[in-house]
Image 1: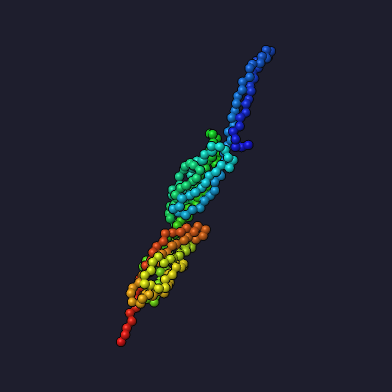
Image 2: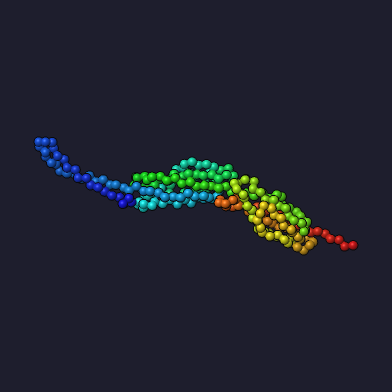
Length: 231
């Protein structure tokens, strides 16, 4: 049946040579046949700095099956190592931080001293984008536009997108959450005579299908009031 242990008994009877042809007592020889386990696991794609979660199973259900793995080709990935268990759970990173990497795992199932056929899976590790705001902070006059340009210094493949939220605001009107490559918003001092500040929190995301989210950066814009004059 492919998953249960089986046995066969050989009964061996000796006979002397002619012309005597005397028959001796038979003996039984029992041979135990253990099933060979198989293995199933799937490829996975993660972002740099995440932990893999490759679940390993035994489709033909051989009792007592264990799994071990060795490494095949590892390209631009750090953190991969040989091991054993039912799950490949390893913290993996893109070595250069800019480009995707791959790590091959060669998995062997074993049960009762019998090794099954290996299977090879690949974990792809996509880099995480960073974000640079230019300028890193800005001071404008009430009623002026911000002009904050967003870029991706580590140059991950594809078009990195940027989204921002308002992390904090004091005495500033006109600031709002948004997305794009430049934060251009007309800001005013709410009360018209005190300086105000607004903090934009900008988060980069790499292009599909990776969609890896990088660490956010804060950009503080100071809005100075504009004096008037009476004569």
